[in-house]
Length: 233
Image 1 (cartoon, rainbow, N blue to C red):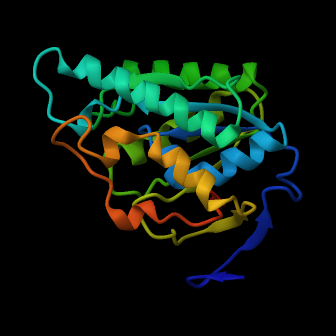
Image 2 (cartoon, helix red, strand yellow; image 1 turned 45 degrees about the vertical axis):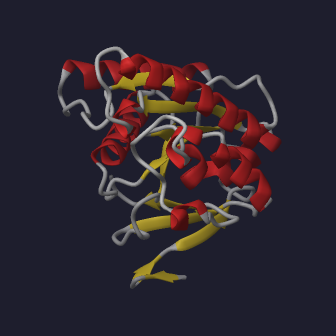
């Protein structure tokens, strides 16, 4: 099929060569997992091919915080993340992993913090036999989303096993460039995805005071996820 002039091959998450891969999802913030990869998580978990959900940042940038407030917000967002993952997978056996970068202040390429995170994520890929990482797209406008993609590619190269990186979009339109694969998941029940998103009350309501609110149009999520694999990254 053509994607804005590029010749690509379309596959399904359950078909070859993706059907046997174990997936790790790297989300910049709690709620990105549901918005961009909720159907992937649900399908992979149902087929026992979901390895882990890793959050890049602590989520503390969604609300203005005075002294002592950030810790409470981080704890709230961790609880919301765990509930969302349970609602997507139907199981408590998967516990989110948190890298705890400061929200909206990503580590710079080449920095010690970035290197340590690459090592931690690569080790997790080896431990859990991860074959594929799903992550927000490199061209996404939010700095944490782009940084998550950079980290995923670096960890994949350092994992000492073959790890494919597939990008998904949250705040951007589909990418252009030298794509080699477009992967689509099965459709998931819309109620299940909405329930997972409702776990993130701090991002949807005034439950935590003034701060970020997810726009209504972003809450209308598609039934399927689409992921993009690049020829060269």
